[in-house]
Length: 279
Image (cartoon, rainbow, N blue to C red):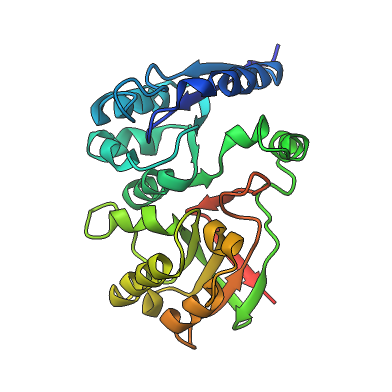
């Protein structure tokens, strides 16, 4: 008999609100019906303000998942602001030797990029809660189950015609939390993915300017823009493409996809994987 697959569920960022209980029941139920054994962190729901536990406690549960030799994938169901609190307590040597692949999005860009920086290991930028909420459940389940199309976002070039390299980045605000820390990835010859949920023109302009002042756009082989939800919903002017071109300059290729970001219909992308894009 084939051994049942095992996965883990954690929340390294802000604790979930109690009204997310039904969503989590649906998610764990779906995973179990998909022939997966599910191990759930003890620190999922907010119990003291936004905290489901201390940074050490949340990190300990994540490490418990990485150290379990049977766990294949670890899904972080959180988001918000607090994920970087777990970083000092992670054992990257053990993470490197673990078979488990970490999945998360938004604020988990901090953990995902730290894992790549410290171990060279790939992680998935994707929110598994979209499997059971948001209006695109059947599409997401089909992608997730067969992995067909999950990691193949459609894109178009807005500057240049080609880029290739290892993908790093994610949510622009959260990614920049790693600046000046040991966990910030080497950007040389990388593809830098940038997306955002909140923030209007001033916030995105200043984040792009910070990356510019760090020399990011002289190091990378290209920039891939995902969705910028608040800017797009508000019809902001100048738009994100204009802001990006102003900050990045004319020499660096820029591509755009509407399928990576915070949308409930978003696909996933592997941070740490080599990607080649052509017109």
